[in-house]
Length: 219
Image (cartoon, rainbow, N blue to C red; front, side, top):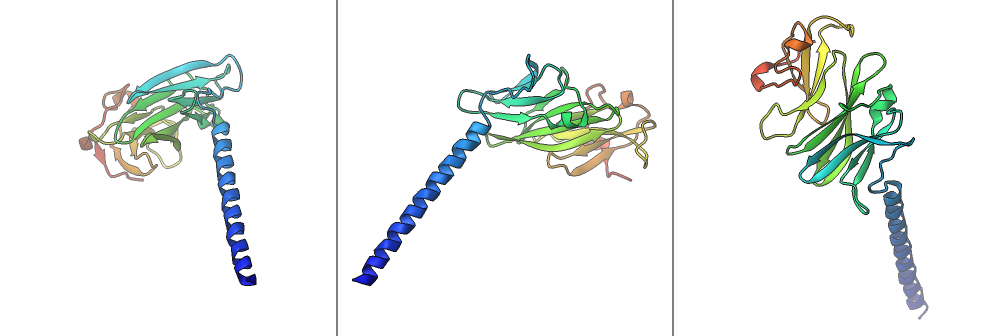
């Protein structure tokens, strides 16, 4: 009889622990939703304004900035109960957001690029990647030659990141320019040959590359 009572007590105790765990999980989930309020623009200083917007597969995307455009958020599909608000981390490098800071491209994996020029004249870009109805901040990219953008180098695939760089070993700010092509996971795929100036890049000011324009990257 005593062993039966002990066993029963153990079962009840385990059930109570599972119940408390379930309640803890629910509380954590509710807290996470509260920390990322749907539809909130996340501005730090009023008045806020929309610097750019795009629509991908019916989802509305807006880049919101505060009064000084030194901080901002990407609001994606924001409604009363759903959506994502993702901080623009490029401003940590001194980037001031402007009307040209947002670019979005649809694909197998869709992506947006938040970009701008830092005080040292380098261009920084932050990808925000959408997969299976879920969006998250991605990689940060840098260009020292003044061009950073998303483009579909391969037809019917996810977009790549194009980053123009001066061809030199010491981070120079002049000289020939080539474009590095990155996957959305940050991996370097290929590069173009060097061009004399930024304006000589194929299709500039909206650079358009094909596989024929790319070669293995050289140091």
